Image (cartoon, rainbow, N blue to C red; front, side, top):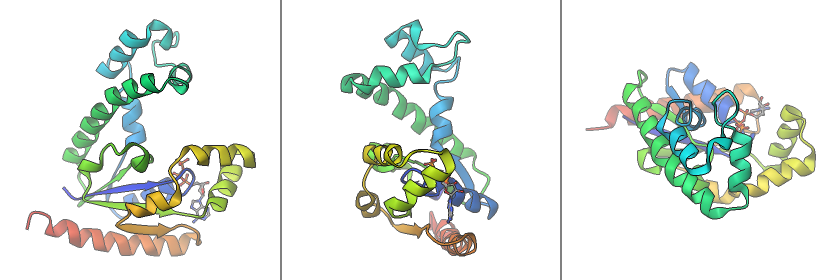
Length: 202
Ligand code: ATP
């Protein structure tokens, strides 16, 4: 299966772009959904987290207390590493399964932290980066989430830089124009991916 990894900084427009690919018939697989699925009640990921951190990492209803987990790994790099080494293989398996079941001609695999974590690179035929200047990310975060400018800039500082993302891109979508131009760009890439996907295995 031909798999395009779609990444980009926070509020760059990954969801907007992946929705456009889906409307054209590509199968979209979102690793944020996978990251939640592998720690759902009854999954081995959640069992391992409870064994490691204790039952206080659960909410009263038995689901993972994400805020408590974030707090636990925030200041402790070795705990963060432990968690990532648990979750990455589980998310890779989850994504592989979705790719195997994909009905579309190719898969768009959304991986927000592709540059930061490196996980899932092995599944990709190609990398597509949604790119906007930082001031656009900041203003979209302010508009969408009501964030303050300083809070928005603080989030950006925790992520990879724009040039680091662009360095791994095979294709780039400049998401600064209006909806019609964005749609036209996605349609062009879709045609390109259809022809590349048709040649896979030749
Ligand atoms: P996150 O990293 O938080 O998951 P994202 O990268 O998926 O975000 P979107 O949610 O698609 O980004 O877009 C962020 C915001 O910017 C949304 O409110 C969206 O409507 C808006 N937006 C996306 N593309 C454009 C555009 N070309 N012009 C104007 N607004 C846009």
